[in-house]
Image (cartoon, rainbow, N blue to C red; front, top):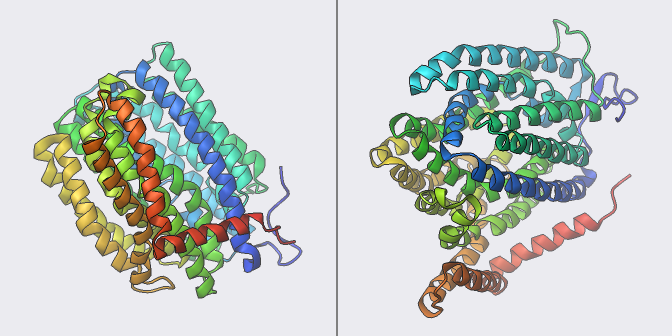
Length: 506
């Protein structure tokens, strides 16, 4: 365990943000550590998905999805945005962190009680009595998550991504292992509850072990008013964002039932899985790094654009790979019982042409201290999403997928790009320019898949995909290399590699 993170020799009771002189190099090295950990966690998640999807019934997943779609809104309030406020603020005192810890813990206990009180209403609303006990058990996840929120934020603020990565992989692995054991023993949907509670408990224990911060008795004057205002806007946005991502589940579960919800939710989860796996480690590094560069606009702009172009090149071309391979991959990964998820998955995957760029908008809002604007966008974006769900609901889960994707690409994406780029170091034109290398690669891959379908017949869909996918990847890579905007993005990758190789500053 490390020492107290507060630098009392330089400023009594004050924690100063990491210096900006080597921030790009430290961020690049931290990003590599987190990326490796994310690959390890992804492998664990894949194993868990393979085993649990074959051991449990689709309806078991649907029951837990019904609960999480509602209680997850409450869970978004446990942080109240205070962890993000702590990361973004240039300096922080021990007294402030201590006050934030006790506020977070009190919120966690209150929300656990609220969720427990909602359990009977939830079971009644869905008409499923078995949801009562499942909801009561899952309510504990809120307070378990709140116990270590500030310690995690301090580790991110200090760019200690090695410790965070070990915690993330170990807690996920232990949780998955316990869930598989419970599923094999016939616990049904309770296996998914076990997975969540065990993961959070292990995460809290390990975070406390690695963090140098230890809370003291709460005081009345913690000087956290500004942090609370920032956190309030962040918390409001998180709630709206969660509602946007789960109202479709609530509506489908209520009007179509548990099994259609399971097919839709699993398709959405699989669509987001590679995107989250790639974006999450980059975001965990980008937000604290960009926050340290806000007083150096040129460095800020260069760092953001370099990382974003690489992120888009890594994610947007996944759309053709996922869509053309869905008929083969989903039954192979989940089993034949999940084949109804295939058409839903294909439609949702179309949103990958813009969704990775939209993810990075939060980096700009948070690092620039624009949490109030972020909240206002959340109101607009969530309203558009709600309209899209209602438009598609008469046609079931597939209709919701079509409507949501269309609204996302054609309406929400242009509005958000204009909103976040209207001020700050990164403008609208620069945001749009980030898309060209990725769209070039993705377009070449779409063309290659189409040509393979026309001129490369095969009696086996799996064999055809195994042959055409590598050809499509080569076509995408060549298209990037032969275009000036693609070559520029690749040069950004070279600069990131150089930052990884550079020696850490003293």
